[in-house]
Length: 450
Image 1 (cartoon, helix red, strand yellow):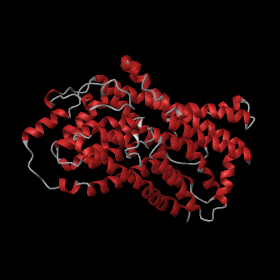
Image 2 (cartoon, helix red, strand yellow):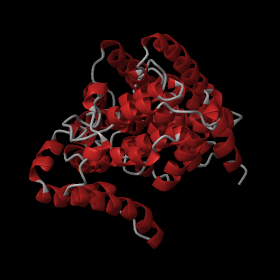
Image 3 (cartoon, helix red, strand yellow):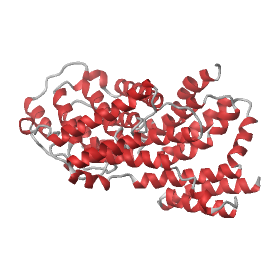
Image 4 (cartoon, helix red, strand yellow):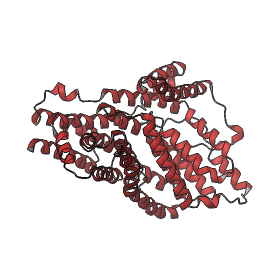
């Protein structure tokens, strides 16, 4: 038992050291996995390396490459531009529109890609009658919902890790849970931060409306990666009358995006199990033949940092499993008289740590370590994994995280930024408790009765 506890302590220590030193957790964790595997578990190095999750690597690389092309050739910009044109002056629709736009971009491989909407959304909030807190939460909930799409990082890590452990979790079920929860949070934010006032019509100054329409135009393509944090100047001020139509390569990109979505949603209903990563490579190969320049640029947008992060953590978890440390956790879980309390506790830990650290790292680490509860506590695996994943994500609007900090920094009125920091901190930390209580109660609790 001492060896297993030593390995678990080393696992936690690597997280702490990497966070304090701002070092890459995946690199440190992979090195620690090799050391623990050789010296503590007495494993051959080939067996340690075999724990690297190649299937998840294919998913991440294929999906981020495909959507990297969509970013490089300007297709994403055109979609945003067209959506904003349709809304016009209907201010009450803007929070929902930015939820959907941010969610759609977040679903395209990297959740942080949704941050490209931050400067646009906060600018619109400043020019219209929208509380910046409402706009930030609209985009934050959209980012969290889209992140669990079968084509995005949180979804890939969560259901991919669950499948590797033998838990039958439908990617669409996971996405549906995340979407429903975040839509509920959007409604709450709409009621709490002035959304009801937007339902009442008010006169709009024509000059201000025209200037706003021009300022939020998004013409031309950008070379920034999907995980970049853009500045407000990244969005060109192109009047609607001068906006270009979709180019042929962008039309082809939209067709391929629709093809990927249809494949993910329709093929499972027909009894097939499509590999999303392989589909991403296939559609990406088509697009790179159509537009070789965009294909070359997309290679630099492949999320190698996340591949290393997830790969290093899961490799170490594989060493823990070989040593029996995971079974040891299961033995402790079996002694807990109320399995729901154990599920609630692990979701609380996921939310609390994720509010200050990497959500992806939390998912990669806690999903495998939660499996003993499924095996010994009579808890439905799909319910616990869904609850755990969403709990780790909905706290990301905390100003201590990249997402929340970006929304604070993008707030146009500098005098509003202290208020934004205070309110986002309250919202994020409240989700640490509210999320586990609601999700464990709604998903895990009823699942234990059947």
